[in-house]
View 1 (cartoon, rainbow, N blue to C red):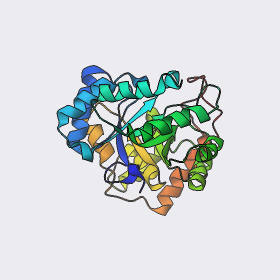
View 2 (cartoon, rainbow, N blue to C red):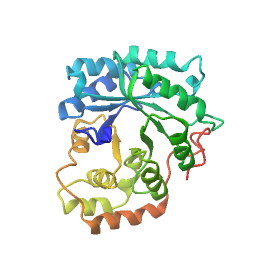
View 3 (spheres, helix red, strand yellow):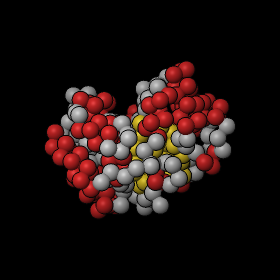
View 4 (cartoon, one colour):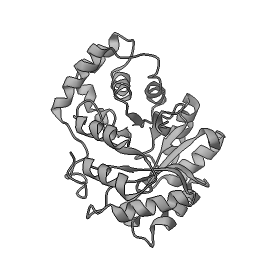
Length: 272
């Protein structure tokens, strides 16, 4: 079973760009609402706050699903495993449930970092491993480079961006997708269709968007500091969008509105 579709893990609470008390308070609220999956990264510089907050919740470790990501600066053989050890220390954990490579290497030669990722898994630092921002070809190549299955490729995924090629690659390679920028950083709210559809289900525009992503077979990462939004983003399992409404939303993907591009992240690959 895909770890992100086990129990409540299909709804993960993201922590970027939270820091300090804001990070703590949001995580405590999310835990109270029912979130058990939490997503952080070395690059976010908030692993310590995340770890402290998760410890404060008192949630049993075996019911948590904690994801963190190794940043590119640590892909060197002399830094990788030490950086994962530092992440575990900051998170106050003996292992993470999922360890991801945050980005492909700057030269897009993926073998070295994937091999180190697999080493971290074999040493028990991570129960599962995956990647983020990989292209279709990188997904294909990854399955041939290492033997350990990758449990996800975390990518930008929302109804304003056509990711059919990536969905096909997920089916082909067996590497599931998970979504970041799930509501396109608020851009979806500029389009009335989501609220219109939501009215028929007694749900908000955001809940419709998140439900659409889940019904596409993609797990979600959401972040908010507002308790009402944290709760609403979790409350998306008690309704199912009809095939008609799924198709109506699907037509919005032609906009191909991408947030994370080379303009923002110069080291990003040429996305499919």
